Image (cartoon, rainbow, N blue to C red):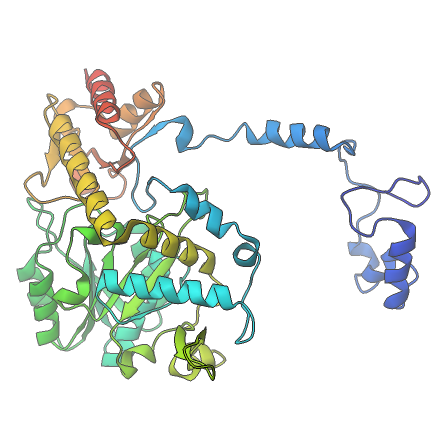
Length: 465
């Protein structure tokens, strides 16, 4: 686009010569090229980019973009049974409607006198999630579950003055790698054995490794492999007896049927909001949360802002705003031990919509439905000759492990066969935990019907024959 050819692009603001000249005059420049005068001549691009012809017609442009997008494939195009950290759940239409409202979608971070609706939405999110996890204080969203867990175990180290952190041996390798990298300067991560028969944390191994150098015990419920940790209170008591703090990682959609971690001794609760009304995205759709008791020593370690409600000067009126920033590390981020920056507030609003829509009864119903479906799927897959479901007698939620050792097939081979039938199989655990052999982590949620599960079973049976 040049003034010489007379073309004014309809999609480029201020492209016409008149408005462009007024902008240049306002900043005291004669040409757009003057904006780049500080860039050395030898670094400036010469000539023109090899781009296709422009599409001034809106229809032509739309059709071109839609052709490009049609190459993408999503879980809508397949029957999907893969989870392992990002799961396919049903997203009510109202969740999308609210988060796409302009005042939420385009809002960044206003102060006391702006973004009132956003502040109230985040307050409601904090309140509902706090009730769900059994804690009084909940942060606005962090980057993801891993970021929340990293900050929580690091805070435990600062609070106790101890470097040691104990985590499950079958923890998500990605989350463990993230935690090791984040806490490396001030923490030593060690693993605790999980009973191969039950998938539960080995209490004897935990107690043996607890010492005066351990500042935090981190475990997940449900575990990465889907088993429900029924020893939460015993784990918390053992940690507390040794002077350590407890961090529990949760899948929040399970808390309609599982006890909140605050009830069995957690000091911090972390997890990901993705199951609560957030779509699966390529490289996105995740948003972590951190919750703790309303004690000054814990709140002071939070790397975030907090949103609170307070009476205003008008009788009966409530205001919502960032609250007492000096209580958290956010206010002293130039010298803070932890800081999280711009994150995923929009997903917190989506989670608030989801939680308010379902309510306590809805969370119970969806949790029970997920457990029923996953148990049915485990029973059917475990009945295929050569296959076995690991930890089959332990309660499970949403995910479970299927071993293909007896069938003489690799998970990669089975998944390749399933893809030919437009089925995305479970996550391959063989490269993550070699001790499990050829094992697949299968994910079943409320989106799967009995027919969907039966189709998976039929396809797997065909693949292993």
